[in-house]
Length: 525
Image (cartoon, rainbow, N blue to C red; front, side):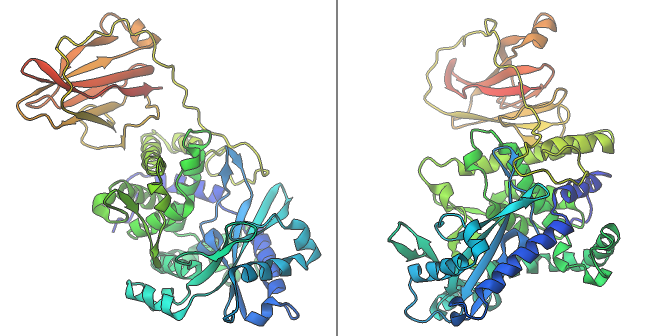
C-alpha cells in the first residue's frame, strides 16, 4: 500500500484544491432538504405512489460523497441530484409507461413541483430549482421497480455478492411518445453505492474523527456538536481523488474537439475505486489511480475483449460502462487515454514547481479555479478559468530536407514519445500528446516496426518558429540523424524553443526507405 505522496507539499495543495471544489455544508444541507421533501411527497398519505410501497433514496455523487460542481462548455453548471423512487410492490400489471407516469403524475399534483418540472426525459423526471446565492440545483427522479428474483439470482451466479445484487431495479425507458420499454439489464444504483462504500470503508474510519471536528470548528453554528456532523460530509483520499479527476476532465475538455466524447463520471468513479490501493493522502491516491488507469493491461481495471472495450459495472456485470466506446466512429477511448495523459502531465508539472505557492498556481490552472484552496461559489453559468495552451503553428519549413533514399513503404513504423525531466532520465512523466510541453524538458522517442532485421532507423528533426531561427545557424535543423541502440530505434530531444516542431522516423534497409512514421508533432510553449 502506498501511504504518502512523494512530494512534500502536493498532498496539501490537492487537498485544498478539492475542498475548494466541494459543496459547502450549508449548500449540502439545502440539497438534503430538497430531496427529502420530494421523497416525502412521493410517499405521503393519499399518494397513489404510496400504494406500491415506494423506497425513495438519493444516489449518484451526493450518495457517494464525490459531488463537485459540473462544468459544461467551460461554464459552471447546476449541481446534479439523483433520486431513485423504487416501487417494492409494483404488482404484475405494472407497465413501463404506467410506472413512469405514476411518478410523474404525482410530481405534477404539487403546484411547486409542477412549475419546476422539465419536459419528460428518457428515464427520469427532472426538477429545476431556482438559484440561491447564485448556485442552482436540478434533481433527476428515476422511477423504478424491484428487479425480479430470477434476475437477482442470475447476477449472483455471475459473482456479485447477495448484499449488492438484491438491490437491483428495473427501469422504464421512453423510446417515443407511445413506446416505453424496460431498460435491458436493469440497473442497481443502491448496490453500486454500497460497493463503493465498501471500498472506502477503511479509509473513512481512519479520517472521520479528525474531519468531523474540523468541519464543526470551521462551520460553527451549522452543527450542534461534532457527533452531529453528517457522515456524508467526510471525504477520504478516494473521494477527493474522484472529485479532482471529474473536475480536471471538465476543465481540460472545455472547448476541445473531443468535449462531447469526454469520459463519463461513472467510468471515472468506477476505475478510481478499482484502482485505489488504500493510499492515505489525496496526492498518492490520484497519482496511483492515474498510473493504473493508463496501465490497464496489467492492472486489470478494464480490458479489451477482441476489438471491444469492457468496463463492467461491479454490481451488474451485464452492464458495460464502456459500451459506447465501441460505437462505429467513436473517439471515447482515445479521449479517455488522452485525458489520463493530461492529468498525469499536470500533476508532474505541479510536483516540479520549486515551492508550494507555484504548485498551487499550476493546479489552479489545471482545475479552472481562481486560486487553489480558495473556497468560493460561482454563479451558475460563470465562466471557468481555463489555462491557455496557445503555441504558434508550423512556421517556414524551407530548411526541411527531402529524403535521400528511394521510398518504398512496404512495412510500417510507429513512433511514441514520453516526456522526461531531463535527457536520459529514467522517470516517465507523461506520454506525448497534442498538449503543449513547457520548455526545458526532454522527450524520449521510440520507434517500433515490423521491418525484419537488420535495418537502421534515421530520424528527421525539424524545428520551426522565431526562437529556433534566432538561436543561430543549425538550430532549425531539418536533416537526418542517427538514433541510439544497434538499430537506432531510440531518439532523445530537448524542448528548447517555443513553437510547433516535428520528428519523423525512416527505416532504411539495403539503401531503401521501406517504412516511414509520418510526422509526430511537438508543441512547445
